[in-house]
Length: 204
Image (tube, rainbow, N blue to C red):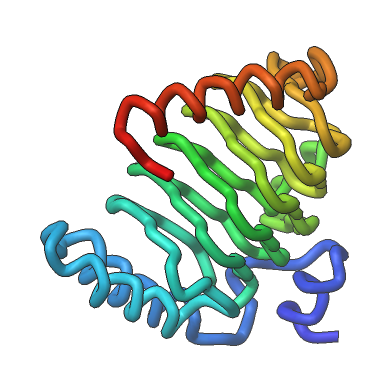
């Protein structure tokens, strides 16, 4: 197997011997993207579509943004990432529809062996990260290699996600853990807030 094939299969690989040019290409694209003014947002999204595997038509990523590869990133519709998003995408990063990321969210797929002797040989591994639909992730959250976040989830600010988070919950902490389920009472509360907003703005 090539080093790239080993990387994508979750086996140990040497990152300095992965034989592709995506890293070099991305440096140029990201340098241009991160230097663009806000009024050129649409042009910036076009640049990112040129290096991502998928990026929804109405996605918004606020600079600065950093990723390692690009082709392993797949993002759905109505995605918003506030400033400082960092994705180390040695393995696939799959993000669903209607996902909101607060500032300085970090998504890591690359990991290093616990054994120092193996680690010092400059070998690493990568595991995919998956985020479902209708997810809100707070500021300064870290998602570690191999985690899956379900649908309709809120992750509290400053959390470090080391294990899978099921659908329909609020989770927070270091390590991140489920705090409680998202309930019908939550829905009624926020629907009432929405109705008040619409009445105040005379929105039908």
